Length: 248
Ligand code: NAP
Image (cartoon, rainbow, N blue to C red; front, side, top):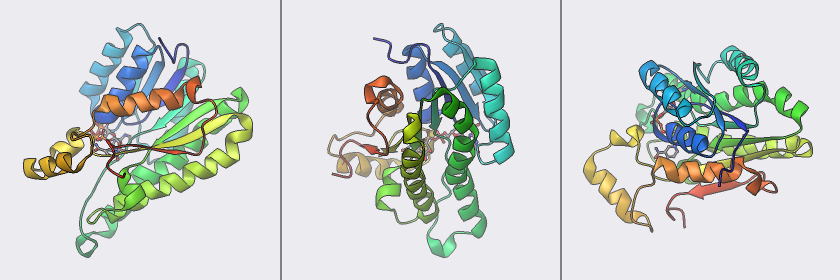
């Protein structure tokens, strides 16, 4: 069953990893997909073609989610190209890990701007369109690290916890207009972001997870389908942990 037929989604940071998985699964469910990337032009072009081949409308936009003006322009372009926006997935994110002792001010600021300020930029940019339509589903990609904290990731954890507070506030502000805002907190999802880690660390993480495996981008994408579709019509302001039981 196609759960997103006729809906248009903007997904930030979809040239690879989780965002790419969401774009692919959304297209399989019939959604038209506008997606962004930061620098991976070739990967973005390849994804655009692959999505179009499934029969949906798709377009990649080079747009820095941390830049307020670029976010405004992006949404203007998407509304012109697609005619509306039903779903926003704020997925773009980075890490710059270090113990506080060695964390530079720049590494703190960059992570906050790309991971947290971006959701302010994008939500503000889509707000007018969704208010006029009187419907919308916004999904913000946090992390178990935002729920629990993690040594060596104070900047990342602060950005991901901040997303939760922002999202719950949006659920309260925008609920009366039928705009829902929810958060997904992925656990350990195996992507290029985690491929930088050494094999022993990765194996110890897999073993510590009740389901005994890392997650896949599709695991996250399927949770996004639920939160984006009308199946979750009465769900807002929630944090859904998709982590193989990690935080249990
Ligand atoms: P990834 O493989 O590193 O991909 C990151 C994506 O974000 C890429 O498409 C990248 O574009 C884009 N991006 C980076 N900076 C951007 C910016 N300023 N503006 C627009 N796009 C930007 O990451 P991932 O593992 O898929 O993670 C996706 C999200 O899930 C992140 O928010 C991450 O924090 C969260 N998450 C991941 C895990 C995990 O285990 N992987 C766990 C919990 C939460 P380019 O290709 O052009 O650089």
